[in-house]
Length: 249
Image (cartoon, rainbow, N blue to C red):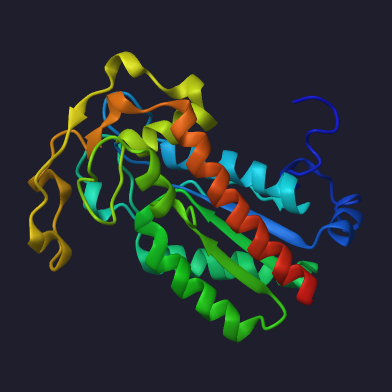
C-alpha cells in the first residue's frame, strides 16, 4: 500500500488518531466472509477476498472506514468439503452484535456489513434486528450484492443451477476475475451444473448429496467484464443506501 492508501482501514490507525478519523467518517464497513470449498480454481478464502475488495470500493464512495475482516461464516452445507470451516448462526450473531455495540459506543452512526457468503444471511439479518433494538442511534445494513440478480441475468450465458444460489460458477468466478484475479486459476475452471433436488430447499441438505466439486455452473464462461458489470451495480445500490441514511442523521 502507498502512503495515504491506509486511511480507510481502521486497523492501521492508531488510538491517538482514530478519534479524528471517526469525526470525519461515522460509517464503519465490516467485510464478512467464510472459509469453504470453491472448486479447483478458486481459493478457500474466496468469500473473504470478495467481501474485502467490495468493502474497499464502498468505502471510497461513501468515505467509510473498513474494519478488519470477519473471516469465518456459517457454511453448514459445505462443512464436509476439505478445508471448509463453519461457525454456528448463534456464534455469528453474538459476534456481530458485540461489534455493533462497540462501534456505537465509539461514535459511529452507520454500520454496513458487506457479506461475501450467502450462508451468513440469516445471522446477519438477526444481528441487525438485535442492534436495531439495542442501539437505536446506529443505522445497520447487511449487504449481499444488492441488485445482482437482475444484473447477472443480463450477462450470464448459462441458466443458473439454482434460483438463489451461485457458487464458484460463471458469476462468482467473474467477481473474482474483476476483484481478485491474482487468486483465480482459470486453467482449472470446470463446468459442473448439478441437478439440485427440490427437497434441498425444504430440508437440511449437505451439498455433497448433489455435487462433488462445490461448483454450481460453468466457471469457464467467467470474465472480468461480467464481474465488473454486476459488482458496479451492487456498489451503486449500496452507496446510495448508505448516503441516504447518512443524510437523514
